[in-house]
Image (tube, rainbow, N blue to C red; front, side):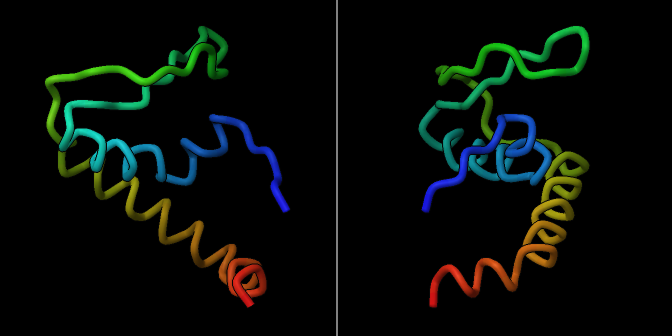
Amino acid sequence: MIKGKTWKEFQETGLLLFINQFLHIFGWAICLEQNEDGSIGNVFPARTNYRGFGEASTDKAYKKITKFMLDNAKELNEEVN
């Protein structure tokens, strides 16, 4: 099964920052352009000289990821079994 999600949903899980932490090792990032109304516009891979994120951003993303895992643990477990 594949279930499409929006970039906004992906970003709100905290996973975008987590994935970008890994991509920064290689000088890459996934970039989201946010429209004036808060919706996500263009999404693209980019080269960057950034390496990592600040502690506050990382803490916020990890809390979001933990909440995502808590909210979806049963479904995730069912999918793998």
